[in-house]
Image (cartoon, rainbow, N blue to C red; front, side, top):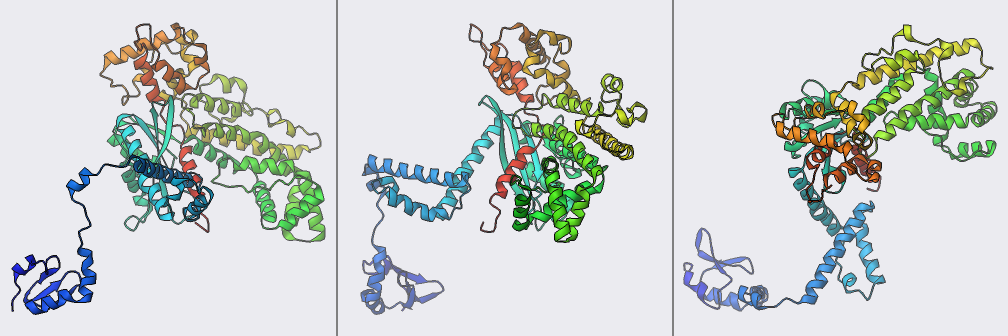
Length: 602
């Protein structure tokens, strides 16, 4: 007997009877998921079977109609409780993420909260485990942050900073950070994305630049003003680099090498001029104590010194070298006593090598010299790692440190009077005599022989010359933007005496076509007129003490008696130019946060 379509309307068969595709003599039960012949008797017997009647309960009408739903009035108390529960779950997920707490802790946290706050309806109705905590962090908190930042970048000008991870992980990642001014009275720095560079399709360094550019293009770059990164060829090379491609795509953007990277490379190159034993001593002392709590305890008991850890010199930690030198130099005498005992008693080769280095007065002179010279670089490095706006003082601070180093080994007239861009740090005819070089007060010790001092001073001179050559190679003291951007500093912008140096903003306006269109002469003239009005206006005294971005924000909202913003165009231009990058230390901070979760348990 063939399948009869009309039987589906029979109340006994409706809802579960279905035909079998390709076989007209068969029927199928949707509830039991079995087939049988399409005879009427077989169908009736199946409908009366216990198995079918048990499974057919799923066909009971449980969903309400739209009309019924519209007639039901929502319970305000219930809605209020549900909203409070969702808010609590959001805050708990944010708390776990902010404080780097493992998401699996949410499984136990909920039980603890329910046990503590038994009288709270919100807590007792929480359903918050590791799965929900992860989903909220990724799909709600993360997505909302990304959407909000995207909307800001669509309407605000921004600069982009990128850097690559340098940790020991197998996955190399690229961090993208954006720099912009939002209506929060200051320049903001926000993380945009952390993405993997190498993949199965991209496995060599030749494609690294293209991969970085492809990730960078996901940012809303139509309003990009500047790009900052370290000085590697992949990022800042002249040909086929990320910077060169951005220049072709967005003409007029400002490219800035990371100042912190550059300073670190200057110091590393200069340290090569010193004896290798300086570095060997630091590494040997660290290695002697690092895995032996016994040695450390013996050292502290023997010399009665404070329990300061001996540090390790690192090529990737910008500020580590000064701390290593300072720690060893401050404990030199104690270390000498301890390793004299270790060499005589334990007869270890490692202890003997360290003893001979510590007993070398010539080597100690180099540590005194490094203790004096390294802070010149590290203090500047720390300054440019700040999240505050530093672009207005970048050139002046670099020039100040550059001259300070030059004056320690060159004639003062030549170092001070010669323009920095034309000064030759390696011009031996302008060198001071070795005995007149300034190498710090600790060098003036009459106990040192003349031969040791001469050799020492020659090495130190090479160190200073190399450091200055590296600074000149990596920093352009004639950069037109950095030269003129200094005038935006509050103390200069409000001082009438600065008119002789900066009578007009036109030289700066002409160098930033992505902020002001060169053909818009009316706007250029308006900005320049407002610039000349600033020193004549009676601004509040506290304006001069503000950070540069906060100063120009307050100038932006400054109104006259008629409620008109009198310096609006000038302040808007200044705030746009202040987002130019000076270093990508912000990317390093993102990597530091990521490294917090890289451990054996996570």
